[in-house]
Figure 1 (cartoon, rainbow, N blue to C red):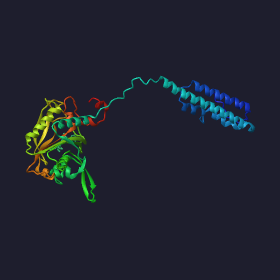
Figure 2 (figure 1 turned 90 degrees about the horizontal axis):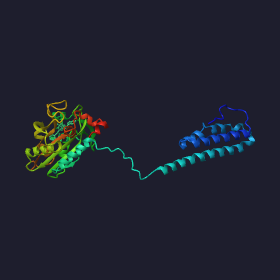
Figure 3 (figure 1 turned 45 degrees about the horizontal axis):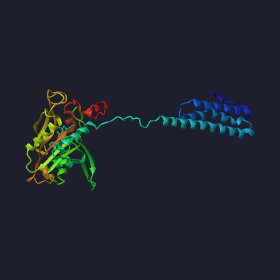
Figure 4 (figure 1 turned 45 degrees about the vertical axis):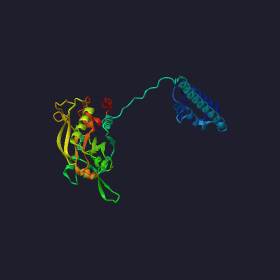
Length: 356
Ligand code: FA5
């Protein structure tokens, strides 16, 4: 498009010349609109904006004799209107073109489908397995009073056993403004006494929740999940505990995987055990993830009478067992996952997550 105002002009412009230049500007603009595929907004800026040839020419109207300015102004307005009309018409015809080429019966483009995170999938599977033997999934706080996480579990303040949980503590104030300790729950065992306080017996609880500890390496993350089983009834024995653990291992890991129970110590169970499963990465030969072919999944034991008493349960009539295992560790040990670093689960790398 020719710019008729390239050279700043201070000389008077005869009215017919100015009108001639306006008409040329209009013709150029209409030709641009006809040939261009640009959007209406872009054309509006290009042809009518402050830097357009028309605007620059209009600014020179002061060089037209005073007596003719009103007449020239009318021509300027007409030229502008014709350009605006042409741009609008072009925009409308583009939409009509699109409308006529749009076939609503064509199959749509399917958006990519995601899936639940693998830890959520594992939680759902674990829930289903325990539901089949009448355990009920419950939820308890993931930020809880120190009492439920430790005190009620037979670990009074300053008890050395608390150190094993590498806990994040929060200082809070209760209703009376007294300082009280809360914790980011380091295990799901805080749900034990909370469940007993519901006063509904027998208890068949499966509590799955987030846990937090100051730990990170190939088999530890600062946030992970545990599932806590609690069974309280009359005449519960270690045989019942072993039966439930065997049932879970066969259902979740497959009939060929082996579990073993080792004597251990927890303040809140007596006797206590740790449960290991043969490593699914090295098939028991030993690798960087496991300890000589076995990976610890969690703890278990018969609920300590002090814990039952803290939950208001009559220990002359009732007893029970509890277990608490890591969800991520269980998922890693499942046949076919071949995961040798727990941190991968939370790396949020979709190339990794899409595989499951
Ligand atoms: C406990 O937390 C006990 N509350 C378990 C228990 C419940 C014992 C009921 C008796 C009766 P432990 O600290 O060993 O125990 O943790 C249990 C499991 O949680 C571990 O075996 C492991 O599978 C998982 N786990 C613990 N810390 C982490 C972590 N930082 N990252 C990932 N998984 C973890």
